[in-house]
Length: 228
Image (cartoon, rainbow, N blue to C red):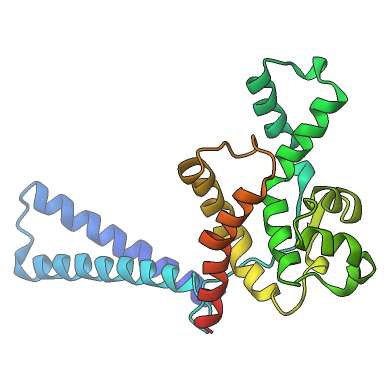
């Protein structure tokens, strides 16, 4: 604490001297050669200090292993996206919230779940779900065989949320580094630019899933473990 105050005091003094010297140069006071050199030294010190601060901030973006600092994945829930998906649905079908039917609301839930469902399906297909769902093997096999989408599984068995505890420890490190840091952005870009479909305005299809899986998730997964 005392060291911080000392540094602050030194910075204040240096700043005052710098401003005084700058004022002298601007108004052509005869500061003498020594003061002009001192002025240049202060400018150099501030430049080096600024560059050092930038470098330190960049270093904070990486941990000691050289990997990008990650925020541990805790959960993603379908309900987080309901309002935006509802707005898009009403825009698409010229409806208002007051005129929505139950069928409309079911479709909006599917809109809201799309990106979570894509990632959940990838987890299921690669057997990366935790043992919490070993009693749901029938539904899991049906999804893996593409005989049903995972939407009902997500909404009914997972209560509309993908939680950290739902994911195998084998792959949780990848999910931590990827899901919120890269997947959501790359998924959005791919949906809009490659598939020409609207984020939070699309229902799940196996064709879309296969493309996103191969082009995005599998690539990121392989890159992650090749760099370890």
